[in-house]
Image (cartoon, rainbow, N blue to C red; front, side):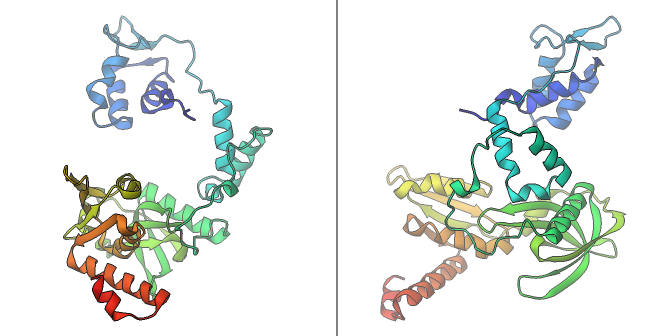
Length: 334
């Protein structure tokens, strides 16, 4: 059972946006599809919207070659009971205040009076999660997050003061490019460029929870930024090479866990094992290692040697904490 119908997907939103106006034209349709659709949408979607034989019949062509919608009014989106229940559940998530003003949340809660939430957060017990998660309810955190999000959307140049993961005080001028959430850590972090004399000095990551102050300089960063180039500049020189077995449904779990990572996968038809080359951000190497070790004997880190050595060191240290120092056992499991 789907909570949200596929008709409310990208193509529905494009058609609904075009139908907001009584009159449109072919150029507007092409531009809207190109801007709001997928990369290949422009190859077939305009033909479904522009009258011509195989279209969806949403517009009719006028004598002056403009296109008029066939409906008297723009389409109305109706929420089902199930969708309202899902929305009521999401409004109870403390992270919702990072994105919506309190007045908006109160208005939505009032409109959903009498609707039972689809689920409650206490229904879920999450394991393998860090305990020092961001405090999403802290007013200072909310203000900093909203300021950072606004800076990302508008490419604002901002002055930021924060404490690094090593406890060092850092202050500087930055342009924030993208905000990302780590479910395992429960933290939001921003990918950024550090500027010097309005020129890019270096790239980095800033945890939103570590920000003390973020101040708008009133200036916009107008240099075009390619996120592909940004992430390529931070990518490891050699990928992590991982052997994955299907024991304990290991392959499916591994692919799901690393779904957002760039990877190349080869399957051994004889053993059913997979060899995965995994590219990652160099600054995320420790987090990647922790994620890999959480799979236990389902995987083997084949390389590079540095990553494999770090895994061995962590496993040895963990063994010693549990059973005491035993060099013979550590060597035997080399």
